[in-house]
Length: 508
Image (tube, rainbow, N blue to C red):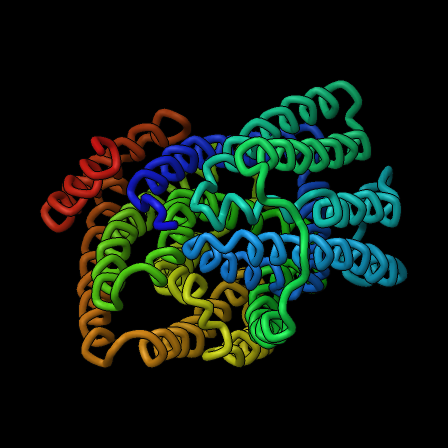
């Protein structure tokens, strides 16, 4: 079955626009409620526990990614028997994963206090709170999570996305009511657990409605199981690197700098993640289509599609970087009400923008690598990058002056990405799937885009920084100026491409 790439991409882009709006605003308001109702220490504790649980999720080992990408081929070939066998294998794996996460999570209980520098809120039982959040993570795997792969393999991620929007809104409204009425964090976590169960149940119901013929049944051939396990060994190395580069940052900050520093880092990271939601949503909307194209069109056509997708994404990335650079500090001033424990200097914001650009500019290539199942080619890349990042984290935190220790954590991630991850993953993709000439063409474009980014970001920052108004009016004025200047500067480079793409998406 050849999937309608444009039509399905349109559906997913629209759903992601809605999802990004909701999932950007709601976490922002949730963090605001936490800061105002409970305090920054609760916010830091929340970030720390989610980092620990993120580490435990390494137990998933990448089975979901491997099986999800393997399902592209049976969908393209209308092989229902193999598709159902993949789904059954996926279900069994996720049940084992959820159980393992819960059991291994219990083993960390005696060590929780050693991961926190300073004191914790007096009314919090660390072990009880951790057990509740651990339960929420485990049931996310055990309770119908595997059904979401059906939508991904058919390039219909818009359906679970809309379900996620609904459950996110329900969770937020119920959670805020609970916090404002009771000021009790435990009750709030109960709401999180109920939301996880509701989301997975609705995905299950939707998958049975849209694809009633796809059920977990049959067994995979032994050679398929061996292939999955071989790729999972590579994927788990990628996941290990990802966990170290993200989750361990919070652990290092908590152990050396305290919960308030964790809260400050997570606030800056949250703002960046909100913009990542826009660019990442675009990549997410195309992956299923790329997975289908790999098996239905020529390599040359696939490369041209890759270039077009990358150009569209880069336009959004440059715009996002310019807006972040101009508005990071003014926004933090308003959002945190000038709380000195949550606001860092401009260097922190500047490094976050660099981190955003270097990571997001690689997303199209990484998306293609996943769709083409090219995980083994660079399986050692994330491990070496993670080790280098962790070593630099500890070194910089111990040696940098107090006011720059947090910046050292961010800087270590950027260095490991640029020196190790970026060149290695590029070599893996182009040596395995494309030609040397195509690689050269791709990187010439990347250098050009970086030059444009430096120009747009610099001029946008100077324009916004020229406005001397403070507070909310100043933030609004700076935001309007940054938006206008960045769009005007980008228009000469990307206007025709965006016009063509938007016409295809919205008028087909």
